[in-house]
Image (tube, rainbow, N blue to C red; front, side, top):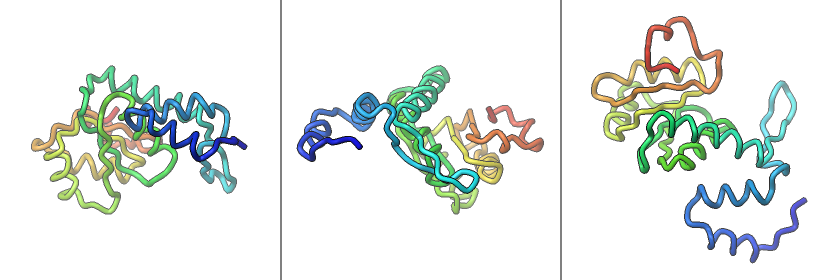
Length: 165
């Protein structure tokens, strides 16, 4: 167990310039300590701060390589879960702004949000979210990359869409 006082925690938060900075401080300070838990195959598995940090850095590097500009939105569509937080922090570490989308939104609602936000990258959880974004992201949207976070989302019917990575 980490024995940090409330005043020490508040000092760290106050010294941070943004959420990405605070996240990096927590990763450095807590490393192998559990950051979150998720149930997989009927049992709870921990993700450490170091793992979360490494995965978020990989996402940030991919976004920078894609050409994400500072302040540019990155859309995320899927359930609130550890993978969602990786894409959230990856966007922020790359200088972007995360844009959460709700799974219950219709393609028309998503089209409106994507067109008005200017998001060029959308991370999606699974096949259903992938199909919804493909249906929503028409010519009014700037979506250039749709990235599933589970490989099983790459269904044959999406293979012809060059935006799916």
